[in-house]
Length: 347
Image (cartoon, rainbow, N blue to C red; front, side, top):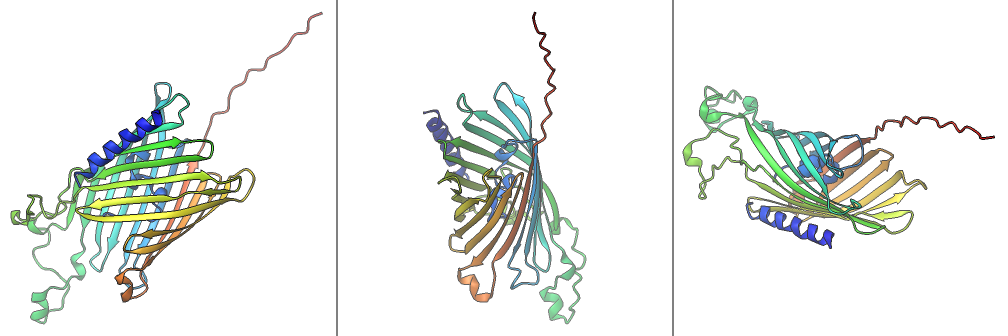
């Protein structure tokens, strides 16, 4: 019953967030937890966690593809009472594409509170917040404009407007995100993780633009709108060797949505279950088929994915995206100082 109440509370918060309204996306979003949801900060057993993911999109058809590296580190830092705890983390990413190197970057710090919902702590509800800076840059060094081409001047130099208030192509704005997460051990063989987050709460204006750029809703046309995400992953042990891990993600940004579902299976390669081979397939709605492979080895987790474009965009050539992710969870425990007990025999 307590798990059911937690689920209902979670979905109430999630639906409330979706009422308010494509950021970067990763196929292996579970290997990039802090770009997915700030509530993941410190939501693990261990001393600290560090990882990164790299995505290359449309490298087969463009000399200037989308390239997105991201790195994160987080840790549970101290207890709040007997069972709850506080986790903190940090995340950076840079998304760059095109001949003009249009780049959107973030550097964010996060904190999350993790609250057990029952005595055995088999269900944990987490709420997190993330704050930092979002920036956008544009390299005009290679730009060519219609007036220059009409006059026969093919120089890529832009002229005198660079750096003026109306043409600020290097902006840096404060930004915030929030998220909730529920982890529940349903029984001995089944557990789930389900969460939601809302990014760009402050809808940062990433361009200094004239007032006539306001949209019909009164929002600046250059404001970065809120990004709502709902995500989940289930873990089911079929037997001693095989575990299935289906996952999904739903995102919406200014009316556009990104929906992906995945069927992933793991095979334990040894009896201790500290070496698991992961293989799966997924589908991003109206876009791409996903092929996923990876391995969990002790405290390491590595994964690779390839998105094969199946939409009309595939007509331009072999598109798609390649992804590589790596995570390490450190477990550093102080050895107990055991005082020897000397038994004195009695005569």
